[in-house]
Amino acid sequence: MTTAQELGTIEKVDIREVWPSEPGHFTPWLGDNLDKLGAELGLELQLVQIEAPVGAYSLDIQARDLRTDNLVVVENQFGSTDHRHLGQLLTYAGGLEASVVVWIAEDFRDEHRAALDFLNHSTGEYPRYFGVKVELWRIGDSLPAPIFNVVVSPNDWQKGEVRVSQHTISERGAKARAFYNSIAERMEERHDFTRNDRSQTVSHASFKSPEDGKHYSVSLQNNKREGPKARVGLTVWDDVALLEFLESDKEAIESEAGLHLNWSIRTDKSMNSIFTDRESSSIDDDPEVLEVTKQWMENTLVKFRDVFDPRIEGFASSQE
Image 1 (cartoon, one colour):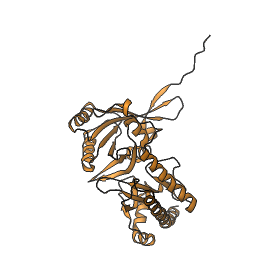
Image 2 (cartoon, rainbow, N blue to C red):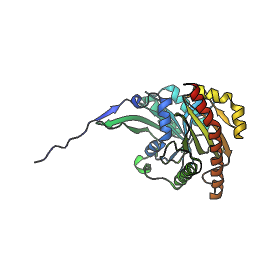
Image 3 (cartoon, rainbow, N blue to C red):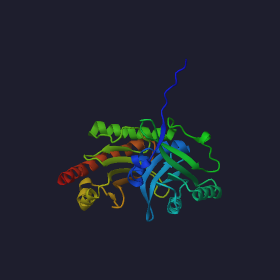
Image 4 (spheres, one colour):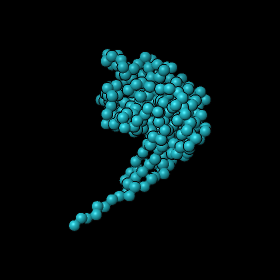
């Protein structure tokens, strides 16, 4: 006698239940989880920048494929695709000379699928255009799981042939992951920093600040226009008042730290950064050169903490 096996039910979840807004919740989440998107596209994606400026606009995500070093632009949208986002997508692709262009939405209108297909047929090998639907599903009482479905792809793209397992990583990606893990361990052991996220990453290492919604990070940046560079920064989420307070003390902060800082602040953005760069630093450098980069990151992170932590704590106390 056989016994019927109990099975769960699968249901679609409104993405706004998990990510109430695209710019404030989904885009930051995707920036931290590009491996999930990359696994569907056959790319090994490394985050370069969230809300990257392109003329008068801000690209949701600028990334690169670690296997080829190709620049990747990602534009996100809740709801159905529209002409405005298509125009922005083309602006970003041209402005940044992207090799891979990804448009993510909940649903794709037929005319926008046709437009991406036309671009793939007309542009040669590059740029390569992808249309990707994002959905959330759960089985029974499980947590919602994100699903990326590729609905438009380049002519020669075959998912079964080029898909990269989430459990595999290129030699270059492994080198980047080891680099960031090394600097994270160094900051913990030598300077009592606390990692913001203990998961392994190929794009950055981040560390906690005294208040939620603010963190320090180190990364290696690379794009065609500006070339390779190392970056140390403070990222602030949804706190315009704090940003204005810090910027009002800009001269004293830069003087105390002995650094020239880039105050990339726009009050209409949910995420803003204050950072400094060191030119000509790349994950492809020789080990002894990478060690110099690590030392620069280490020293600069300590300077950031020394000048920003007291001010962040003082501002928080003044708001109580």
